[in-house]
Length: 221
Image 1: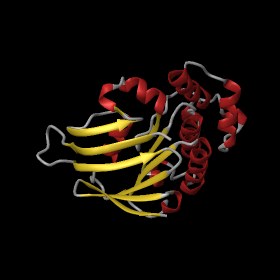
Image 2: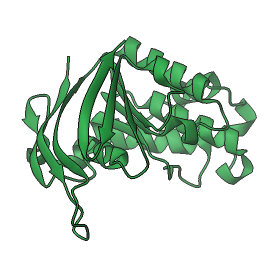
Image 3: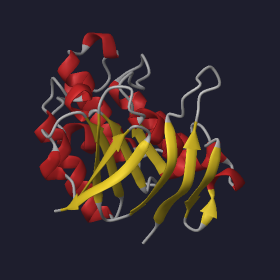
């Protein structure tokens, strides 16, 4: 079991006089899924960015596998240990297969085209679509590529999804989240996703909330 622990964490943007995150405590571990509720601008994306190693806290400690994240090479951590999907997306303008190949090379240094092809087909893409430029794919199919990227990153222990109702709006949030949760349970990964609604609540083992910069445990289910 691997665990991410947040202790006394503050985060404040330089241009702001108000803390986005204020004295945060929380722990998340592999083999479980977590949903974090919050209104717009409540700090949900900031929390994911901290866990992804994209930024560092202003105060406090975030540990991964009993090591402070700031003591690690965050580029290596992010490349190997984390698969994340933010609302702005992260796809290259290349083909669906090239997107997965690049992710595999960055995370493990090797790429198995046959295995990556199987992942893309498993989410519903057609074989004839795999080498097409992304702009030739529908919005639905592009979202299926982002789902496949999350599933294909073998080294990742933490999967982060910001607002699944938005990033999987066309391909189906229930389809995508069911696949992700099953994948994380089978592969002993941690799934953490943020939301403004209760639409995806059944895919979480624990419910948390962000309000006024505070992270609060709601319940286990």
